Length: 256
Image 1 (cartoon, one colour):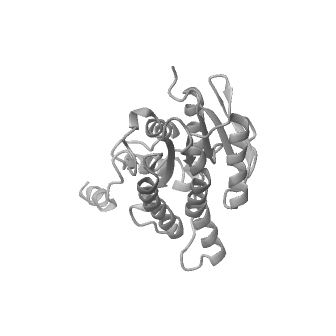
Image 2: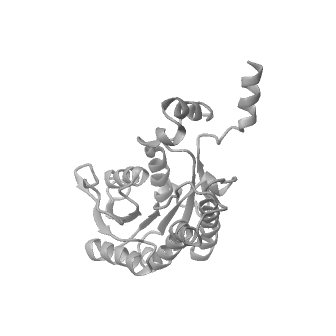
Image 3: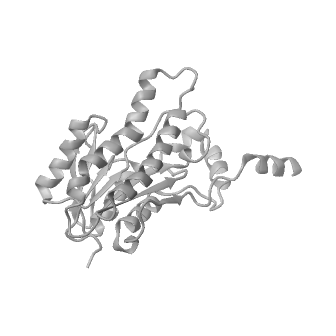
């Protein structure tokens, strides 16, 4: 029997780079999956002959995030898993970032997942097994985040909320977070100055490569599963060992 047979999951941002892979893994493990985003994906997200249900919504708006939960309950009659995956930030200078942009980034990366978790609580706690919330955070939450200060601060807040909700909502709902490191994206080479810059960054990581979306998806599946039944309030680091301090590479290059 598949791990999530008969269970229902919501994945916010489920059509994105990481979200698609999380959705496919949950589908392949038997879950009914509802995904949401501001724009409908060009292609449906499918796995193992099964398709995710898409609901168009901007989760920064509370009435729209509630609509996603209502759609899941209407379609499948229950809700067992919420993956707060939607998030992100463009690079922005802190000295010149507009208050409007800062507010939008905090709403997307902290307030929206917190509100959606609150909206989902009643359904998540009503099942025959404890509900599960997974908050996708970032290494930007646990180290400095120059150029994305609001994003890093919001993701740090999300980890704190993870611990608080786990304590407040146990044993009916388990709440865990992922501290995600650098993740490969097909269009990401431009951000690192081309193929050579991309390779240099990957080579600096202890595992010798960036994470692939499936690495994140597998961690989500574990935390949602009964194998993690006693895991709650945890922040699982999925960053391949962390980022090696740049000064060590500079010293090595100087020595060579």
